[in-house]
Image (cartoon, rainbow, N blue to C red; front, side, top):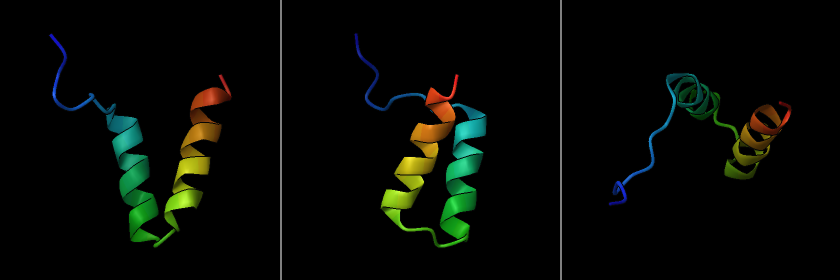
Length: 40
């Protein structure tokens, strides 16, 4: 059974909230998240 919403780690959630507070563009947020989570 699939969860209706994927689980977001606390660190990722904090990063997203911080970027929203700083009013970063959505594409910038996506690029930052991708860079952090693929840097390994």
